[in-house]
Image 1 (tube, rainbow, N blue to C red):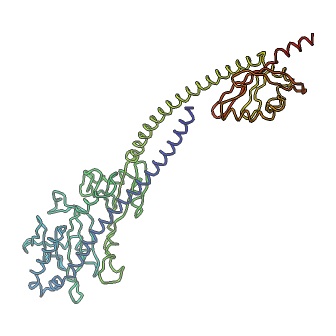
Image 2 (tube, rainbow, N blue to C red; image 1 turned 180 degrees about the vertical axis):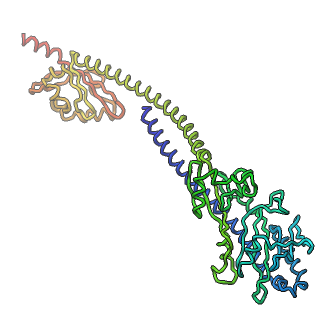
Image 3 (cartoon, one colour; image 1 turned 90 degrees about the vertical axis):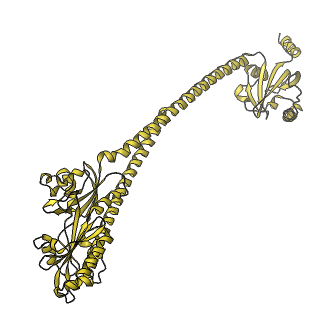
Length: 478
């Protein structure tokens, strides 16, 4: 009574546990991809917005006029005010600069403490030797150069505190279509990086890597910007998670599991963002220089993946222990009840056997019938009195042992007693004439007992041959 339900409980629990774990794993994967795609969407929107601002600045009439040397003095102050207004409004541009065709800074506005600061002419620098000047000046109209995301360097030293930076630049053309120089935005990328922590999934960690596998945002702060420091050149994903980096570096997006845990990744490609801007030209005409791209990666360790299973397993164990205890108590009670019932049945059986022995050994004939007058028991003394074998008489109507008119009215006597409680021989002795199996009449002294058992009636008749007649029979036989 205990083992089968416990086995069923364990079987159902195992099935439910497995199903819950599988569902939890699916939800974790979906949540991770949702968080990743949300981060990518925000990242791309901010970067695309900076590109849009760059193209807007390059198309401003003040800049186009300023690009003409003869008009420079006239438009210089207007362009400085335009740049100053832009950096103050956006709050994410560290610098906006205009470089002429020779690479010389002509106008530069810095963003400092929430204000745009116009740099004096004496502090403007020659940038003709910088990679971004060469790259940008080789581009055509509506083409954009996007630099790698790195830390800002001033006077050969990494600026402290770290200032993540992306440089966006595009050539500037005058009204006649002549390339006059370039405009460049130094975009503060700290906001881009900080937003990566705002994913929907609370588990796991968010990472940002460049195309070489160096961390721009990492699980461990000290692992970031390894390519900027000579003593950290080996700190990159390909050295720590080699198998994972092989898959991430060779695909655009996906999700997979390694021995380290669950990785979800997506690629941000600036060259695909400019095509989405509405610049009044045919789609596909804009190209972002270089092969710059970044990898957004979410990572959950094996231990974190197993945590829901462990927590859920503890709950199932606790519930199963309680249910097993309950089943044990119930099984114990039912077992005791069953044993009591078996014992009671055994005692009843023994009692019935004793009663049967008494009835069968009785000198008097004992007959029991039900409320329909059907014979249910017929002891040996009755068989001898009426000349019937027990198999011949059980199940027959008792009125076959009577003479008329008692035979015809016997069923009515039974019904009358059941309705009124009054019977001719019930509870008191009397004398009737019976009929033997061979038709011989016999005088019988009879006393009937009636008992209602639930909704049924049982009538017991104790009969003996009339003593006077019995003496005559005995005398005649002598």
